[in-house]
Image (cartoon, rainbow, N blue to C red; front, top):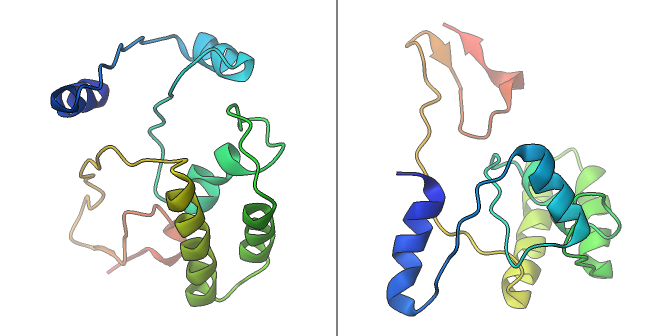
Length: 136
């Protein structure tokens, strides 16, 4: 089942009616940049710089909703300059809390992903960060 159809079925009992409009990517981008939408579905990856930043950073070309929060922008700057992954994760947790409190983003569902293709592949995660992957 197509992911948006899953959301459509999940939300219907709550009275939320989703009209799905599957678009060619060029049209989807054009409509997004023109603000011709009520909600958009993005299927990306789980790494925050790629998943969230383009859609919540003030002035970003993919921030079609016009979301702007100076505190979030400062947190992006802080995260981008932090090399310690644990400290960086804490910055993103603070940012996630702001997004949650403002009800800007919702996660409708998560689909499992198969990323392990051979038992020799070691240290693979679902974040698609291949810098630590190696063959055993």
